[in-house]
Image 1 (cartoon, helix red, strand yellow):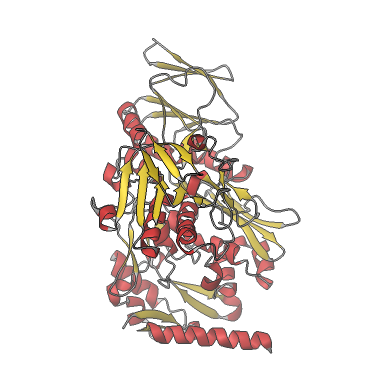
Image 2 (image 1 turned 180 degrees about the vertical axis):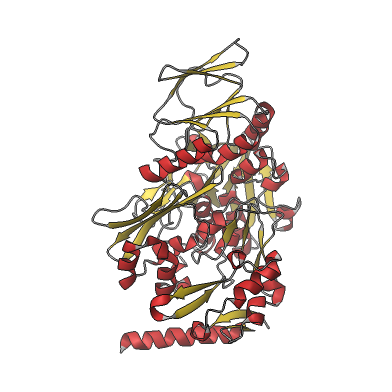
Length: 156
Length: 422
């Protein structure tokens, strides 16, 4: 069963454990600036929104890559950057309409979420259940429900 | 069904892959003119700087990739197209018949009309063959003159600087990369390059290049009266779509091959994609040669769909966008970065830190953007432009602080993937 990250901003307290865990897992150091998941803070509303790649089906980044450096991981459906092949041209970073693949100037390569190979540390480290790693079907259903309720509201 | 593709760049390769996927029993012949496997010109700067070997520029890596997908790759030029009999004449005078034809022949550098442009030591930087020649001449301490500070010029600046050459850039516009920067941003890029030790001459033209016996093989005469002794001159003054071979084929060519919203040319069963195609621009609705990688890929995919499945969904055009790394300073531009009539603009400038962000709105919708020194979440600018999400109260917040762009994006454009699919 394919799984995907599910983010419920309502449960996020802005503790940034996810950013620390991500940077430790992927960069070997506690440095939220290098995290592939980013928590955005809305001070006005006291709201926090964790945000990262949804591993979208369109895979704009993978399509746009001119040197075949981004490939589909058949195990978990993630789109992974092969750093040895990436030349650092950054065209994927403008092609991704979600802004979730980014250039790392210190390595000269792009980075994105690869679901930690199937054991995403952001979800692992989240103390409030705001980030969970669950069956894709379930997240799909949630999306549909959220969408349906929006449509209902719009009609009302 | 035989699908023939002329041109083995990104548009051609993506189309070939999609054609095989959609029409597994059809045959796909991919014709490339160069003596190399299909490769990416975008990767050439990284080859120049020595980060990658030539193989690193190849679009697909394994030697038997195309054969394994059932795509026949042939190395040949096409000398003419007969659309009435659906027949191509190849360079060796043999012929090749097609049922559906895709033209993805890309572009070629324009040769500026100046004396000495054909002298030895004057090169374009366009093909892998050019790159090899440049590597030979651009040795440490050599004097290199780069004509043109457009996309190609700027993207090879870093590669040249890294080779420790004495570098002079000559640009006739008053700023760098004028096709993606306003005066503020283009001037900031110039200031950055100058701080990196590159001699940048804007509002300057090369008048003539002469052979010289004064120690350096070339003498570059500028229109301001100065001269520069050079070992190598690189001409990067723009490109033009490769359409000469179309002759009297009846295929309509303006700036490029004009295609409809299904990527078909003015002639039935003939399609065009990528840098050679003049397709719909998402922002203006006009037909325009964008000549960018994401558009080449989208064109290739759309053309393949139309060739196999017929003309089902008209596409709404591609968003023009660019990202450029000029000696480590990263700039982007999206859509109507120059603004629209009756629109509003929000700008944040930090010249000392080389950070710049400019947002262009029509009412409360983002229609264009450009940035300098930003590497995080830049793609969201495309997302906001292409989904045309009304920003509501966030418009005013962005007017006072454009750097809150990602907050605005998250607050207003969550459900967007459905809106983006063409």
